[in-house]
Image (cartoon, helix red, strand yellow):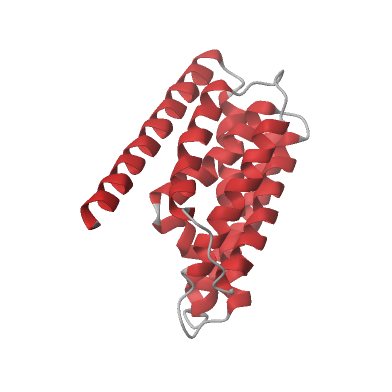
Length: 201
């Protein structure tokens, strides 16, 4: 039943995405919608937030994604204002590693607050990256709305994945394996970023 409700919410959000693409004139909204999807690090982190929240269960299913989106709004505003956050890119990569580990370790009997705090921090970093990379000549408000809608859709997708996987033992094991792959991907991103930093010195 919970999965059906979440699926219904996802279908309500998707027409807004389709309409934005069909219109073609609102580049601010379209750019915001697409930005979280273009970067694999953003994509993995945002889906992982939803998966982990479903694994924790209870009020975490909505609270953790809401914390991420709220922090992302603040971070996005800082980015649009060109406020600098040191090592924000490395923090985003770290979010992939940590959230992947969260998928491996999260369960309904653990405290949700450590993960909630990390999600708050990582949400601000992801939002800052979206804000700082806003294209010229677009509406900041529509751009922000776009990446918030896209992020919410990815969170809901992650919740659906986590909700379904926690109902079957073999799917639960597969989900933990997927979490390991997400962590490994984050480590690969980190090594690539560190290598690029050394090369440019």
